[in-house]
Image (cartoon, rainbow, N blue to C red; front, side):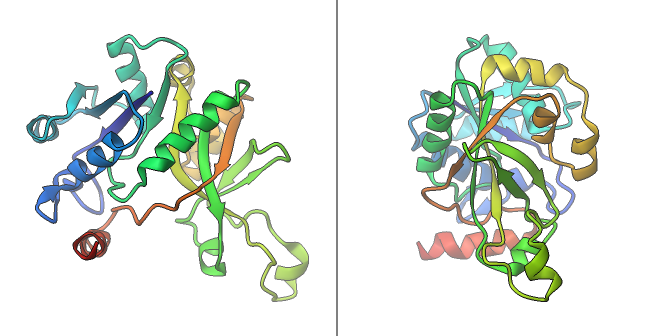
Length: 248
């Protein structure tokens, strides 16, 4: 099992966030340390920026330099797979570089889910939404699955739409599932993924996993056994995570 952490320097809402100070360490180092606490045999930071490379190597990480032209973290991981010459059946977990509170157990869980679903090319994680605010928030990605636990669709919209309850102004009995942006892939599949153009659904929702469903491939979904803490997208997020770590 490999864990690959895509890390860019550019960020619209928090430039240089991978190297932002978080309780005396770069944010990226916290993410790397969480990955090292999982069952991963190898943890690799994938970046196109020399500043990130220098910082990551300083705290002992293996770094793979990649092209700055990639449009998604999965595309960046495809280059890592090619560079490292990974076998097609190797399981690769994509851990985003702004998730310093991701439980290591969740990395193991998503990898195990893929390993036990041989007809899936990819696995990811969800959990039950417990309030209507998140259900209607376009920044919260929702997912629906079939009876066997494979993804049917991901959306920023409120899915499934509980017609009777919501048209009557009532709270739906179970608003739906939130998607956690943690993925496991088989290395051979990622090479195929990177060759596919962006799909219309992916472009509409700005969700790269929809490229997989567009091409008729299966994504296995597991129910998170442990929920992650907040990720970091904004200065306010950074301050909130700082307080959590300082208290913990």
